[in-house]
Length: 434
Image (cartoon, rainbow, N blue to C red; front, side, top):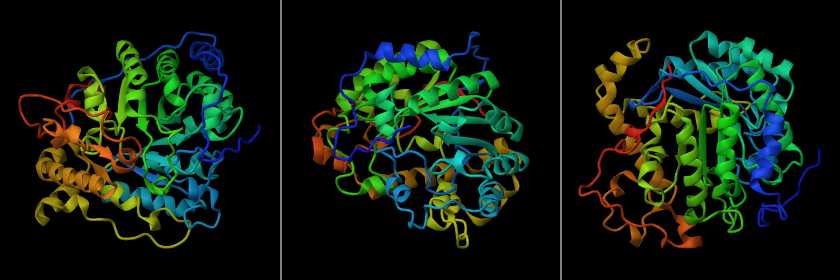
């Protein structure tokens, strides 16, 4: 396989592409087994409660170089303190704290690329044993061997979240490796044949928006349980000036059309779809239920708990060496000590714990979301004036506004000022995780 060396300032959309439908046909020929894919019935719910999913970063070592990766500088810099993988013992300590301190019952395990980490099966077994359902966020290159997937299944993996950033050469150019798409499609076939559930992640780039409807059809044909569409954001290493460039950062209005078509296809097929960090006003009203921006994220069971995230995102929890820092106190904000203590004792009874802590905890999480928006540069443009949904919307990121302006946004008129961040998302039927 050949490494594709493209500067960030260059366009990562290859020229002379085959038609999207032809690329989809080729992808399905690789991904679909000979027997039809059966989609098992899944319990769903419109109840919105705070997620109990945590996250762990094992180290920023990867076999790809996605130009939009939040940690691309750390992946390319072998001397960065977060680059090398941590030990199994340290990873276990982090996961135990996710359960004991934060009450998490699921975890997204990521790298870099977690399938490169040698003790990954041992960590999956450990998480399964302590009641922390393990998922892997992966590019799936190393899942093209079926025997390896059988080992993951035996270890107790819940599912895989596979990053699909377009079809054929669009994906390969995005991730910097010729042939990556072909191996990924073979991995999907293996996942289907072995019987391990999977979800898809697609970052909205100048290249990937050409294939959003086809990614949706790939998901429906292969039996993906969820598809997440993520706006290309300037977090972490992408906050560096010039990291996001006009040739690779699509305008919201450019993405809205193919994104709407993809959401219509997924909705018709009964596949859960989520859009991260996209202005509410730029999608049709029927799809605002799928928009999970900062204030909505805590209510998505596929996303990360802000309390544990505020701890695992600190550098000591991402480094190979060094001691862990004390758990953060976000979950304690807004409630008295006796209530915090009671919540800890109710960890094994999530429904009762939710009733006891809901009001104050939700307020703490909402304040945290607003702080994240302010701290990472979100702003409101003139087009946001008079918007009835402004209280539950992040607005537009400042560097996007500097690059493209704010003329695309327009006020939403509801006849009342929205204050509940679940106003739209409580209309969406989502997978009910145990």
